[in-house]
Amino acid sequence: MKISFLLLSAFVLGNACYKVAQEEKKLQEPHKPKVEQSVTKKWQLVWEDNFDRDDIFATNIWSKISRNEKIDWRNTMSDDPSLYDIKEGNLILYGKMNTDLKADPSEYITGGVYTINKKYFDMGRVEVRCKLESTQGAWPAIWMLPKEGKWPTGGEIDIMEHLNYDDFVYQTLHTSYTKNVSKQNPKSGSTAKINPNDYNVYAVEWDAESVRLYVNGVQTLSYPYLKDQQDKGQYPFVRPYYLLIDMQLGGNWVGAVKPFNKPVAMYIDWVRYYQLAD
Image (cartoon, one colour):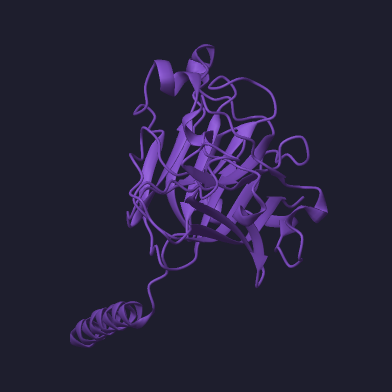
């Protein structure tokens, strides 16, 4: 009986020591964070523009955004060649004070490009790496509009909007539902901190289930498809879109421009488009 008791005690003690050792081992192992399902998706690069050429428009992908004085974000757009440049593999779009008011009465002129009628992006992932210069009244943006469907019925995807000297960007989705029903249920906009003096990567992923926005690889917003809200235009994003990249000066949202001498610019390093691998 004594021998059995000793054997049992030894077993219990040994088992306890083993558990302690295992716990210590776990503490010493590096923590492995849970990987979100969206991160594990296998994206395949199907198109990119690295701007490694002399002529922005040589690929027949981009066009200059024309001016429309009745539209807030578009009322300073110009085809002036000085507003468009390529240097060191960057597409550069400028905004500046207009020094030739006889040729163009607009106080400020800006450059912008889009892929309308030339290239469309169907459900997938779009990334843009760029750096933004700041001034009071500057409103650079990277965004998408639908191939078919008027605003806001067809949806609008604001991948990035930056105002003035802010150290953060806005990312927003617009639909008939967000305009007429709710912007918060589900949440349709967010902000994200950036380093305005450095390059940042802005991205969107969209499919039949949700639209997801990112800054530097970190998801900032997920906007889901709600089956019971489709009669209100809640989720129009199952369609192709074209891409817009533009510098704007002034507007109701950004406010008035403070006069400046040196042109303000946005530097686009590359644009990439991915689709899910088979």
